[in-house]
Length: 165
Image (cartoon, rainbow, N blue to C red; front, side, top):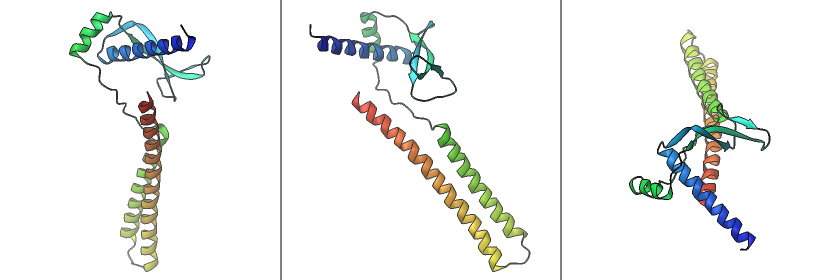
């Protein structure tokens, strides 16, 4: 057999085994005594670092061993569903959203405090209050937009990768 054909068949078998194991794990059919490494693109609080592969990984329970007949029976009652990953915001995106919200709240509070503590109304004081309010609104909007752009780029990248597989 040609080496390229053999490699293609091996890739197909590995892909099938991975989909099958993921399906069994999604149904809760895991063997707690066996674990496998699931490599990740980014660091999170639950990941460890593999120095040989230079990647982050997570130890997850492995799927139980089933025969092809048993798996076919399982699929009859619980067919595999296409996996739609829910992307969570990264730490930087969450930080930008929090900073944006804090800036907006601080701007509104400062504007209200300045408005009600000025016993004598002056035009310069009112313009200053409006400046603080509008600058906090603009800062809030810009930080939220940057955070959302980052999230949408990652989401689009993920969807493009899933479309290729």
